[in-house]
Length: 624
Image (tube, rainbow, N blue to C red):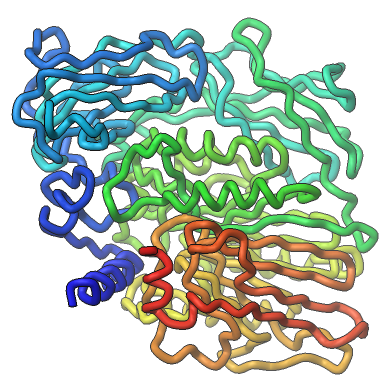
């Protein structure tokens, strides 16, 4: 009986996590003592740091002598990603509510600063019995000195008990967070990275390993606390983001491998990296790429663990993307990028997580609600607090896309035989709006003899199997608004597919207009757009699908994963893959091919998924 109640409760909690603005608090008996350190409560959230109440921390001076000892085995961070061991002893009355937190910067006021990360002290097996223990943390270079603090009483009323020595940074200008992006111009690639204040940032590059005859100087941007719109972004989640550099490499030849490193002569360079330049635009090119949405980030050392609202499956997603990256040249990430939600440290974790892949191929994005939305900031929804006060600024500055301006967050680009139109569901898109006019213009200008495939990407779904019909921003409400504004144009201009996220699942419709399947022409071409939801890359899954799947949906899979895509002039094949968090590594959730010529009927292959046959089975696959 108790097991059945727990299974039902888990399903209910996951459903609530997908309802906009929903908050749930659980008693300590469910999420505290039963887990390894639950604090005094747990709350449904997208980022565990949101639970922390810095304002309730009593006054504490780092100069005070403490009876409890907290020490670190390293006092200098020599490179980003360095491991440090933190040990404590003589803690009286040890509890599951004790934890070790990283504070950035080291002299921050504890009643004004949330931790950058934390681990429950009870993870150390001698903590509860002896009041001492050790934990290992992986530290990123956040360009300023840091320290650890031992805190008690959970997150609601955190009480400092001890602090460590300061850990200084050997090179605050170490280049970190590297990632690539296309500029929308053939023969170009943008390189982006972060330092503290490097004066002469640049990229050195060439076509031979270890030989970089070319240099590209970087522009530098950034943002301040005053640029934030409120919430934790302007409060206890703030950490200086440093200098955000971006350099454009020009004159690249299609399908050519380039070697590069970024940094500067004074402070040092990244390791040598490489990428393949984009293929030539046109029907003669075949491309292979990867697509995700709603991924987020997680700590590889196990930090920030609280039971709900985390993105630990994102680690498995990135591992899967890396394993299947051979020969692939592009990543599309359609919204809800890092789930930082105002806690700047989480952007650092995100870029560290994707760096092995994002320095090898461009990472093209659109913003989602968790990047953009904040009351009175100009988004479409008016009252949503989903960005934690970032209101799009952190996203726009950290991920430079080929949009005209930050106020116009839409753009398009060609990649081999595909034209990608990337638009924002977070700002007005209704008929007559600036974005609507741009979408119409871009669709009208697509040359289908050069780019026969037309794929539209956004964040909130165009079609969705969901029970969420909240009147302002519910899944069904926004999907209906999107279709009212754009479906006619998508049909008129023969859009092949849309890729959206927001709902944390994988879903695929039939070729559909007005919720009715249209089938295929005699030559094998789909008679209408096919709509995908690919929001299953790492955030908590959404179980709020309808009891009876709508007839226009061919696949609905509530499982974490990602998608790989292969396209030439006549065939476009998508494979939706599950990741290890879904119970089985690398299983195909869905596979289908769209065909442009009369070479046969479009094929759709569905793979048997025994664990996905019911909601109960899917819940059990996660628990087991």
